[in-house]
Image (cartoon, rainbow, N blue to C red):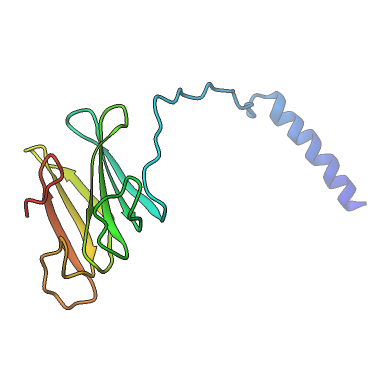
Length: 154
């Protein structure tokens, strides 16, 4: 009987909350229009990390890749960093795999620089490919400067 009385008290309380305006029903909103959408990658695994607007109205995207086909060109091995430059309509302007024969990952720091290029911070286990490092450590912090077209400057 005690539980029955408890249920009787909850219903009037809920009704009082609904009629006093404390409860507000969700208002349906129109979802935004999709302006564009594209898929990028290859037949293996890609994982996007960051997307940032660029000075020219486009976007710079950083990802990890294990593909060596499709949109991915220049794969070094295991896991590479993949940089994608898109225009304002989401169309691929250029892409670049970065890394070496071991594993790279970017958890991610990329910024556009005042000259229009990019600076990228990542981790690497490689000592070959794009990685000009002779460290025998398990992983090293790797900083790279790219020009506006994705070419490595240093």
